[in-house]
Image (cartoon, rainbow, N blue to C red; front, side, top):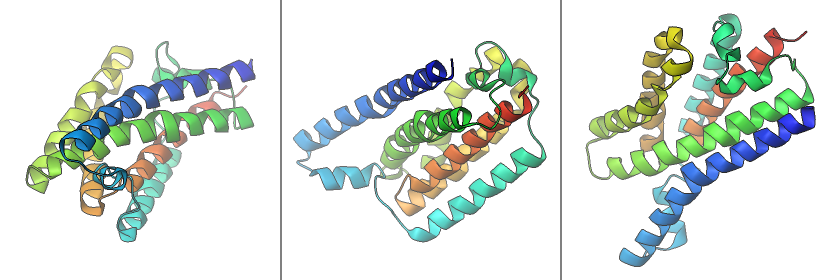
Length: 207
């Protein structure tokens, strides 16, 4: 059973990376290679695939750890996260185990953390920041990131209160990406927050 859960988590993470990061990057790469004759290293830099300024990684780590601490001290209500359709439902009853940790890493680091940060902060925020003032570029990318997250209300209508937090987080991670030139900091924040949420569900529903 646990092997099946882990396999499903790995497949789901891979599909998300291909759809949200791989295919958009393929088109972006081909366009810049053909139209602007840019090399691979330059294209990677434009989408935030670089270390960037180290101090912003420090800022991101501090913000990520603060977020995890808040989730530990004041965990969100459990029932919506184990409801049918919730991605955290798969963690129900797993406890703090090798399986739950591996699944949380796949979900937080790969499925949501990397794929969403690469698309929204790497491609979208990066492109907007080269065309608009930083304030407007960050605001627009945050709106674009926020829009699909409204779908959470279909599964968890009582969780509407997290939507301002989602938007604020998009503003913070967008600012980090634009100022640092890298998606590493935003990826770190996104990944740790989602890992903490998944493991919180796993631990609190352990039998």
